[in-house]
Image (cartoon, rainbow, N blue to C red):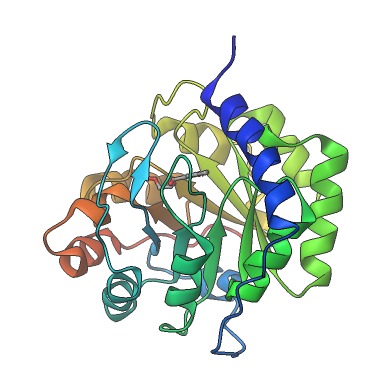
Length: 263
Ligand SMILES: O=P(O)(O)OC[C@@H](O)[C@@H](O)c1c[nH]c2ccccc12
């Protein structure tokens, strides 16, 4: 069965061949961004990585006409730990232009949210102003993820490694990555279940100086409290903030108390 993830990855290959010939976007604001890991580690408040997400394959159009820079400023004012920007265009209507606009406006760590399968995407992310890139275990072979991880770290980027099940968590733990994201949404079926974070948290080595980020399907304060209890340091939130009439307020309600796990 071909899944949506297969489709996205197939399309990426075509896009990468085009990117190699494109001019690379350059962020005009050159600054050393704070480390995302430092902002999350041993923090006694659940942190929010707030996302710019115009659309998604599972939800269709979410907020097509958003001004990414303005939205990111609201996130920054509300105390977001970082901003995530979707740069995939065929399925999420994002772009490296969105990433650049956000990077030129806010001083926070910036995550390039894409399906990275080639080094050229890491070059684009860095040049457009990202300080963190996402690598999705389900989208890459073990060899490839190691190669891209090493490449990104050598470029001075932080890497968020995304997993969905125990097998993938094991792959992530073999890298020395400090940022591990549990996607509550199955990229193959789109089913969302916050208890994925709980399940993986019970197998998570909190004592190794790594942080766990709970991604997707976090809508409100109740959800935030649930994943904070599991030991998540942060939540990655897109849709709930993009649909909100008052993203400032919505973001504030997610910054709940958390107990610092043995780290
Ligand atoms: O809109 P949500 O349910 O709050 O989810 C945000 C984020 O976790 C989601 O956009 C995401 C998580 N991992 C991804 C990988 C690729 C694209 C998108 C994602």
